[in-house]
Image (cartoon, rainbow, N blue to C red; front, side, top):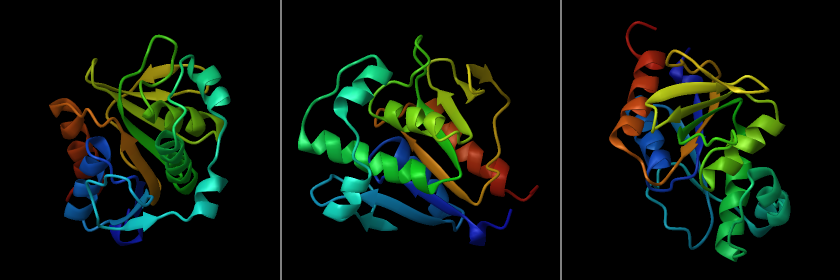
Length: 185
């Protein structure tokens, strides 16, 4: 894949999103980091502040998100804007890579979990590196299946995940880019 044609869609937050951005920058891949005024961004490269109207396009009911995620979320303006930016990240990419933790109910832990659920709803290829198991899994449409470490297949891809990035999660991001864009490809 020609990395000059690739775009990483992410969110500029500390942790997994920053790691995806750092890897994209190292490999000369364009970044689009969706954010909003007042968000504490860990990355500034490719920052794309969403307007009020753009944020509204990604609006989703917290009751709906809480229902499909089997947990409650804070009903704050900040959290709603985070969910709206995640909508833009997932909507923009052709496939989605997440660093985090898969829970027993097949959701992904934290706000990032909404990104994974939205990718499922959109029927996009979805890959999660589970930091507890140190294992990549892929959503089959019905269950998470353990897989060999993936290679990015689409030029427009989403990289997101937890702010609580562990060393194995950081390594998973670095190795994903090396496998995809390294000298052997």
